[in-house]
Length: 448
Image 1 (cartoon, rainbow, N blue to C red):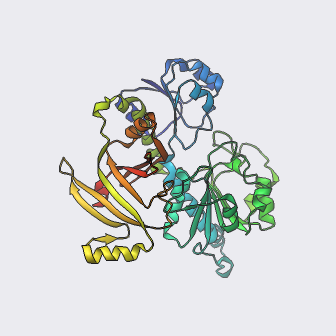
Image 2: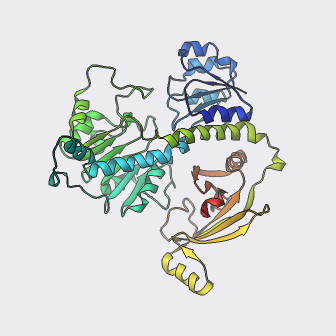
Image 3: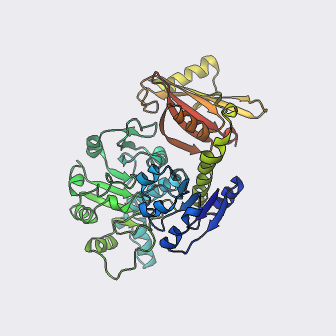
């Protein structure tokens, strides 16, 4: 498979593809037209945001099997036409979701505690303590719009705070143990801090406008680490002026170019942008929420893993595909999880912790393996969309490969794969509506 790389990325991307057997060629400087003239020679192309992959480009890509974008979204690609051509589209939100979650949390804490203002004042010889008295996040309600990879990562970071976390999403059943899914009306009624984690599409374009802002029952703070086009800047500034929005953390701006590169190529900016620059209750960063040393590597590795799953691992004969290899966990609901855990500890000698109890055993190769027993509150949404009081977790060997196979077989796959230090997780529904969690484990993470 011959692959063209048109943007620089972490070296592990090219080396990983080459280990799979791909022939990789780099071209970081040719124009779009020049690349169009030779794209028919390639089976795959790896991009970031240098230019649009539109219908004209795709029509010349007669042999293209995949387009991989080293980023969270596919907004620079004509998705409908690419899918019509049978081209696999690959993105990597799993690679930078943790970075986005940390950045969003860091921005709101910095704004609440006047860190930018206080730092600049001290550098200027001012020591103003009372003028920089901060406010606390605890006790507030954080509303998230868009509960996919990024929204879930932010909610997970908030777990250590005494906050209520709620979310609105156009998909049903996306809430989990970190966040309760609610209607848009309830979110607008309760929210103190609003964080945007929506993809770029028609629904999210200019979503935060004057009418939308006015529907909030209370003044609120805004965090945007998604796309600048989601917010009408003029309406945001008006809301800041009349204190309907109390402050804003903006990693992205409406004025950005498609490539997200240099915003400061013009000599003048709109009046609204000048207001943001001068405001002490506005914190700005240059579209770097997912831009960490670690995410650069993880984004690249995610692309390699997905190419492997789609074009190489799937070549494994069906008879060789291992499905469930063991029980990974037993989860059930309780009105009083803490009290019930104590009962199991006292009467059945369960070694319980915050998560429940972990049972260790050895797999067929003699490696340490574990099964988790956990109790959830009766109002948990982690089992959604199932209405049952229990959920099983099953251990699998290759989650990506298995889920692809299950999709082909018509099995209902819920949500997207989520990856943590202790493994990858995916979810399916059986014919009776039982939600099943599939886990590709890294047992050693529990031993460290």
